Image (cartoon, rainbow, N blue to C red; front, side):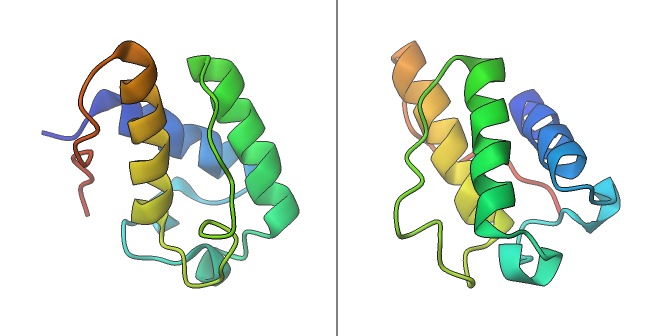
Length: 94
């Protein structure tokens, strides 16, 4: 079963980046989606606001080969860390 938080995050990404939700599959790169660094930062700000967390958007997330899965792992890890939970990989369906 997919983590409900992943669905909420994907909805934010689709809306913020003006993307069709069906294009958001785990192994697609942000570059393939046409997500610019500015769009990524704006999207992360929206997610931070919605989930009341801080997400580091360091050099790793700014590389063109970063996948949607990489981004989701970073976001879910931040949410889990704030909640005091484990930083296990989220269940990301294809």
